Length: 300
Image 1 (cartoon, rainbow, N blue to C red):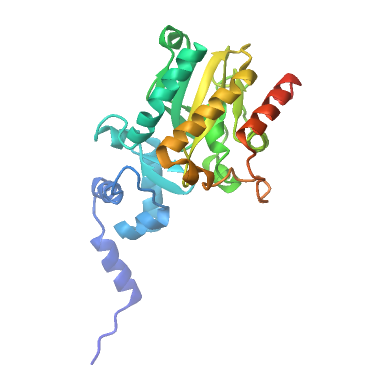
Image 2 (cartoon, rainbow, N blue to C red):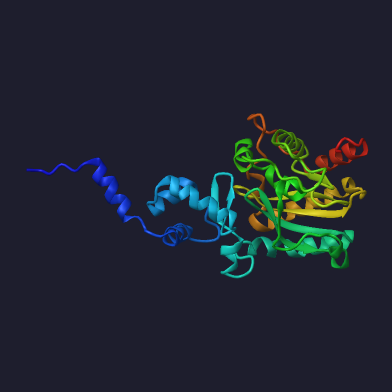
């Protein structure tokens, strides 16, 4: 006679087969990421580890807070702590190599501080900093994290995410670094709309560090932003006129990483009202608009 297996017995057996310790469960989750470029959703990780979805989500968020993983919208990837064991800045080597000569030249040409950063959840993580003696005056630190919505380089990358991804990143109150920081999610959405209208150029004055201003642009990849760069100066610096240099440099880094043809076909910044974003105009046309807006004082 065939035996009847109760559903509760199956569930109990599955629970008994789960790794008994938190360390083993964390190891299972970390092992599910096969390399520094791998991006997995919660469902992907739960499927690979056979852990309950609720358990997987709880551990993933703990690993993000501790910087073993990073979250970009709904996708998770290895974070700075995990990558550090494979060599400094592992996973971002190609980006740093492509950006280094261009950012060095930009710093020498402008005599200003230049940053290279990537998104780490809702934070921007600085990968490189150029500027010689001037760099000492800017309190950013290579390897350090700052709220992405408080910096031009962070906002330039956030502008390439969908409104739903932004909502997912900012479920709690927005951190304010200074009195000028954006502290409301709706205000952030409106700021990202303005950045998209400027073909991805972002500005901030005193939002992250007092008396510091910067202009930033994202480095584009086949699936969205893979990094961002910013030019930093005094809060009174006329960054509007330097914006074309940042735009050109970001485009050049993107081209080095994936080729001009691939960049032209990469995703455009997401529309906040779910309609298609108009095609990004030619760079010369964009620069003309940028300078015209700056002269009329419509950015700040």
